[in-house]
Image 1 (cartoon, rainbow, N blue to C red):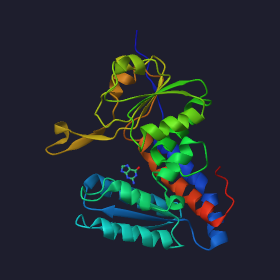
Image 2: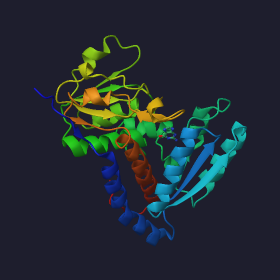
Image 3: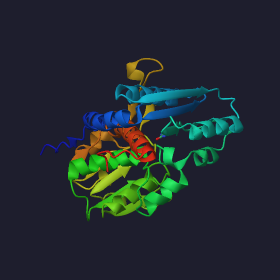
Length: 300
Ligand code: GUN
């Protein structure tokens, strides 16, 4: 018997649709407040992956007709200087969203910096006020990667009510907020992590399996219930000697070749969750601008 091939969830195509759907709201905001939604992005240091992410965020924000203001600081920048930049941006009425690219250099306390951002401008949704709103079902800014996963799941599966979702990874950026979002959709949620006993037994009960751990190709076919929907949040660089010296390729947290013989739906890496994260950042910037300025928009 030839194994079934899972259907690909095309995050690139869906993210393009999502960005296109923001354009009428961007135009409404421009018309009413006299400028487009505006995002400030802060990058501290020279981390290669962060530079690529920031470049993509800035490029796509501008392609959608919004403004982005980039602040690049040296890796020697002290915490006080960074906090004072955040404060300046908090007080600048022409800035709707503030994103501080993580990770920050070791000598800077990430938590202090994130908590210094005005929660109404916190387009990453990392501030404790936004985390608390999400946990208690109030409207706020929702972290971009979990929101992207949710939108893909709704588009692929429709109603998520009563489905069992298993999330591998308990980070503040992905695992925990995604658990809250899925509970709000009436899914049953299990979060497993590095200390969980017999992970495979739990993951193989999942109708929806989400991997967000940052370990290359950890999730094997035997971890997956036949017919499940698999969302791979991981983006890991592994060396690819077949491409030449010093070359690398990107793989997810899921062993794609194995998993696609068992799952019914699966996201590729790259081209799955990654583009959705950026699209949701643009969405959050539009939402933040509209909320701050009291503009009625179509996004609910
Ligand atoms: N670094 C990796 N992912 C993210 C993200 O979603 N937001 C920010 N600010 N930094 C990140």
